[in-house]
Image 1 (cartoon, rainbow, N blue to C red):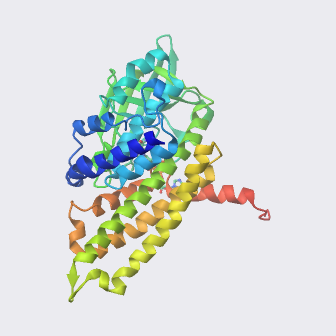
Image 2 (cartoon, rainbow, N blue to C red; image 1 turned 45 degrees about the vertical axis):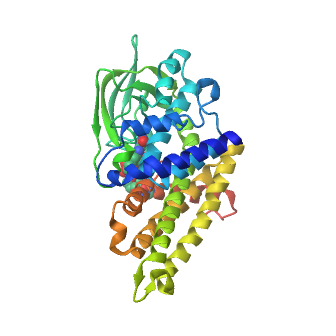
Image 3 (spheres, protein in one colour; image 1 turned 180 degrees about the horizontal axis):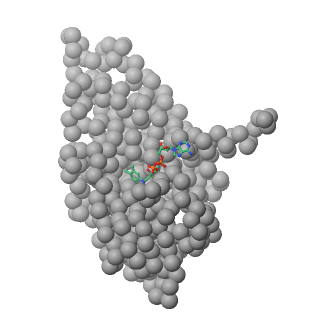
Length: 378
Ligand SMILES: Cc1cc2nc3c(=O)[nH]c(=O)nc-3n(C[C@H](O)[C@H](O)[C@H](O)COP(=O)(O)OP(=O)(O)OC[C@H]3O[C@@H](n4cnc5c(N)ncnc54)[C@H](O)[C@@H]3O)c2cc1C
């Protein structure tokens, strides 16, 4: 417990200090300095849940969620960048050989390299089974050809878990997960630039031309199932991060309203100005309860598919609805980069796509809840 408190305190000091100082520059297109990732590594944030025997911190999923929340309250993109790197480290511990983790894990933990997980392609996102990147087994190992895009850390990652089709197109069970060193010949990385895809997230893509994979870490038959299971954790921490962004937006706007005067009084004096805060706090409380339920289920090892989907839908919706209201409550001052609003607004839109788009998740919830009830069949 004291260990978890330690990493949470260190994360808060890091987020509210160096990350908060640098984040306004990211709103203007700047990118995080590599030193910031090294500082994160020094306090354990590149291996929060990585087991201690592998050099990580060995904390629970609940602690990882708490760390993600603390970082995302300041900058969602930077939090996503770190958690995506730490996830690949965890994958190495679970599925890679001794040679592979001794080669890559120390570099991930030290933030010498960032890492990414790559499913999405120019031709397909939500329909994961339709990925077209091909993996072919040869005497020299597995060779991959294709393109991945819209990938967190894609513009600078040194290592990727790449999902590719080993069998016939559209065969979900034919998909395998491969460890790919992105410094290998045949890899061409590129940045994905957009006012929404925050630079602190390192969003990018890469083209693979007959690239030799380091290893098959998730064999066909297991990879697709693993995606479906592990994405529940990702949906849950993204939900927590959306709650954190909305919480930060409410706090900054409330603080401003206590000081900014209009028509002779502080803004907070006016009931009409305060109403959006009541609406935001109510939805935030409901969303936090759904997120906490999903965290508990994941920690207990229960099937969290429904809970994680509901938590992410609620948190994304609340953030997308109320962050603009909080920005409005600030007047023009809310547009300045020293405030969180513009970054959090863009991030709330991004969160509506990552780890399962909202419309896909709503359909998942409808199917799962329908199967649990006695709804008459038509
Ligand atoms: C900043 C950013 C970072 C990302 N990072 C990663 C990453 O690290 N790794 C990775 O693999 N991917 C990543 N993604 C990609 C993300 O997972 C995809 O955007 C997501 O899966 C949706 O795919 P798409 O954008 O291709 O939309 P599409 O699948 O083309 O869908 C377009 C729209 O139609 C809706 N839709 C699609 N099918 C249906 C249907 N059957 N019924 C109803 N509605 C439907 C979708 O919800 C969406 O609103 C990232 C995306 C962004 C924006």
